[in-house]
Image (cartoon, rainbow, N blue to C red; front, side):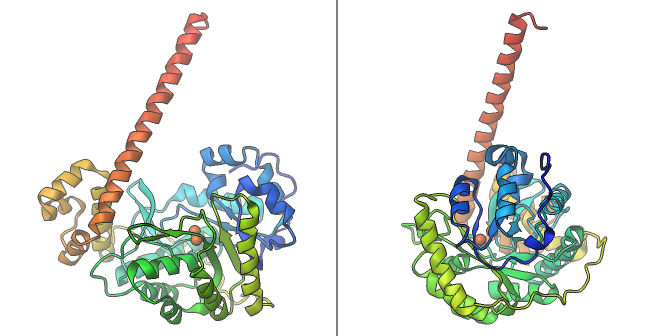
Length: 410
Ligand SMILES: [Fe+2]
Ligand SMILES: [Fe+2]
């Protein structure tokens, strides 16, 4: 990322430890956010908007809006592309770009998702559950330590919604989150809407879920709107007001999370009338400040971050089953030839990815079929769209050359 002709970067202390209730920043409501400065304590900046070239060009080409937002509000940063659960090479380019952005903006608080969505360069762009078992805990912990060292700061991990839990795993979601916290010094970004949706979609009690989490590790929370599909499935669409059922859960979560510092309301679309966003924000403020009128002391006790912690080895024996599972799962979604082979003889096909372990084979075979079909068809659709865009681009280039030639410009 290059902040073009940056004005003096905002003092780092401004973004060191934002406290209160704020908004996930969307450039489409830049003016509205500024107009409500007295009620919005902080903004969450999606780092993706500034490290993916196309998105930056679309959102804020000269980064003027970003600079204004940074000087008007304390800001925290939220990433999207880490895929910390992927047993594979780390996304070096993404980590470098994130580092640059954080350094240039002075933002200090960072968070990412506890999920996996990318395998061997294929990115599903939808979060999948990491298998809730010990090899995955070990991988996430090792990868967390590596990324923390690379970013030079601890960061929070967000619980995500997932279409189905990987079957035949010894832990459940709360147990997995707890184990990750035991093995790392990460904090949690607790997305309360995600807890609500997962609890309805996968049949667990959300308050008992809080009970089993180390709630003192929650440093940030998300709240978002959503809806229920006619098929019964709940979705966090980020396009509607926070659902009625989520508010009491949010209240319960804030009451328990004694160290929480930042609450972020996420709304990606249907941002007008902006009053409907502000209604949710005001409700969240009322609940937050009723429990947490004063900030808990900032965590000064964190161990120093060691430099140069190596990336975990994806080829290590400990991760063979998990890696094979992830590669074969993505093969079923993204590789038509593998799909075909898998349908004919699953065991034989899985060998292509070194997957021979019977437990992992069962986890792969018994994954939710409806979701798998949905992923397959979305992938094919995206691939077709990509092809059409590429073709259109090529045709446009040819047309430009032809025009140049016609004008004798060559
Ligand atoms: Fe998120
Ligand atoms: Fe979220």
